[in-house]
Amino acid sequence: MTTFALIGAGPGLGLATARRFGTAGHTVALISRSAQNLQEIAGGLTRDGIQARGFAADVLAPTSLTTALRAAADTLGPIEILQYSPVPRADFMKPVLDTSPDDLDAPLAFSIKGPVIAVNTVLPGMRELGRGTLLFVNGSSAVRPNPNVAGTSIAFAAESAYAHMLHDALAPQNIHAAQLIIPGAIRPDAEHSSPEALAGRLYDIHLNRDTFRHYAEPLPG
Figure (cartoon, rainbow, N blue to C red):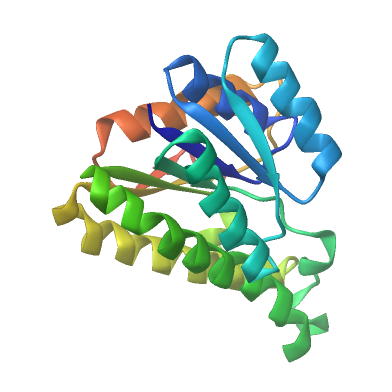
């Protein structure tokens, strides 16, 4: 049995994706900053018959993220699928003309250093398995810069470049890197952008292993 590791576990998309991969037979490692939040989500999944466990870590604290991923693999089994989808902080989203160099430190650590640390931690296990999937989830500013949210626009674009390079470099090793762009808000009543619809889409990306970039819905305008 292999593990689906979710960085950015929460009650919306995170829970839906954990449930989708869990019902497909994977153990589930939930990673976020809030231990209480993790306990609640893991408890709900366990009641549904899914083997799940929470591991508290902050993507801005490299050692905690590495420790959590290693503990997840040791406790639940080798990590076959990694999803990187933590929610950016509100202070990452200043207008471009109000953004200073220091304002970019945390967004870049969040969207670049965090993914690099996570990927480098799980890659040895994926190579040993002979397969793996790396899923990156971003908003539309990753592909269409928005001057009202400069920090995430810059950081998401860099994350996209990193993930795309992984897609090309790891394909010969049977490790698939892919990105899902969610243009708007995640809403329970949305046809293509509800948590359940997006979770299904991410699972399909894992199974189909084709192109790098996918869109939940067409970009507006």
